[in-house]
Length: 123
Image (tube, rainbow, N blue to C red):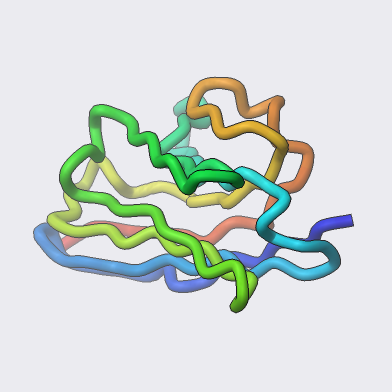
């Protein structure tokens, strides 16, 4: 059973940066693809970025491409989401999730989820 805990969220001004962390325990992290999803109030959950388990292939939503970077440190059991040039549309609760396949659209591919961390972009 994989357990995930996110951290690093907070309040940031437009144009600012944040780095989210997702720390795993309970199983080998390198066995899993990891996805970052977000959900804003009144909106559906959307995939932001994901990274495969085998080759570290990465995938990004068009809305964050060029601004966000997902990476993993399997030895440290941690996946990161580095976010730059944040704007108000990025305000949401961000979740990391683990599963067998990297997929931005199919959140049901991920059986393990963290509790989420709030990111608020506001001046």
